[in-house]
Length: 114
Length: 109
Image 1 (cartoon, rainbow over the protein chains, first blue to last red):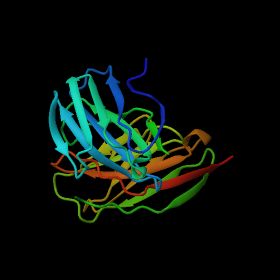
Image 2: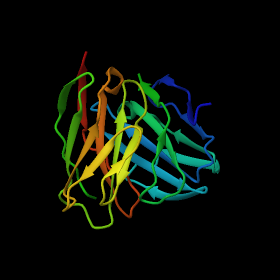
Image 3: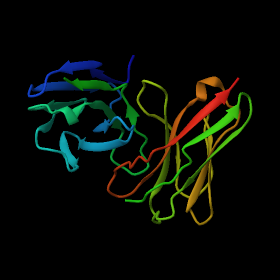
């Protein structure tokens, strides 16, 4: 069983479109995250939710909107996609939001904007 | 946010130990040191974390300097499957993992 699963694995779309990426974890964790890894391979946190409540919101364009329907799911909706949004997006989860909590990552969604 | 500095790349022979260094000179007293690795086309994988004392688990050991300004991840016997980018990160009370550019480990058969 995959612990943190993301769909789709690949997403190719045109500039200006709206798209969503879904994430589900079956680890019973309370905290979930979205990260972006750009072409230079730098991983940067975007958002974090703890028990469906937003706790980290980095400087991300408001075209990006996370939604957590329950603590096992954290989806990412992106409006008006731009070329610079091309990246790999990783979802992660941890048992809680403590500073000694390991994070478990999904295998990523590779988003390509044409 | 505490920053980390790692060598861009390192090489090792299979079955030999590997010591991956990391500097985190701006670390604060309660910040934890976390190590992750990323295999090609996969998400980061948790390796180990620690605060002050050295730590061991089934994957690796973490040696933390007494002043906590540096740490070393030790893979006791490198295998080809250990070839990956290894990230040293510091987590503070903001609960954010700040990833640097990592060390690309090449394991020679």
